[in-house]
Figure (spheres, one colour):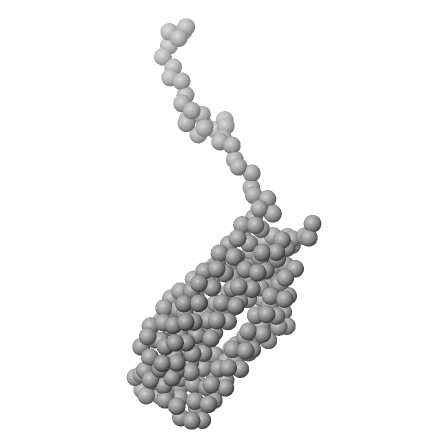
Length: 239
């Protein structure tokens, strides 16, 4: 040092933290990039829903048939509806402009809901008319309890993604997942009432509740009722 003083040189870290300069900031992602990220997330969530509900459907239908439980079979069939819904979302978001397929996607979901309601209603009314008593289904109780723990989290993630995208079909898919939570509670109530109190009829009544909710959801999706506010991103264009 020419002045004979002992002046320490500032470190690189000190220069970065000083008030005179700041580390460079990455530019925010473009709208197109953000939309692509959300589209990928929607597909991943739909894939997770499909995988879970395939397993749930196989278990619920097989156990329900073995236990003569209309509600448990109906619960399994509802899982197949959710599988179909997830596959529709996957199909929709394979398109360059997923919004162009949204109307068709919601109509397909509606048809699957109507089919579910028709089967569950016929099966439940037959059970009530003949006095068919379901066997206790402890495995079904465990399955319903598992869905009560898993489905709300998945539904929340789907709804959040759908609202950010402004996608009615993704929000509708999240509503189906949330419906699965409600159906799990109804199923659990019916099976426990049969196991503890011997109220065999409550199982079929619970299944009719499942059918009624399925009809309501089907009508809403067929009409294309608004289910979400506009998203945080501007609408995509076909360019």
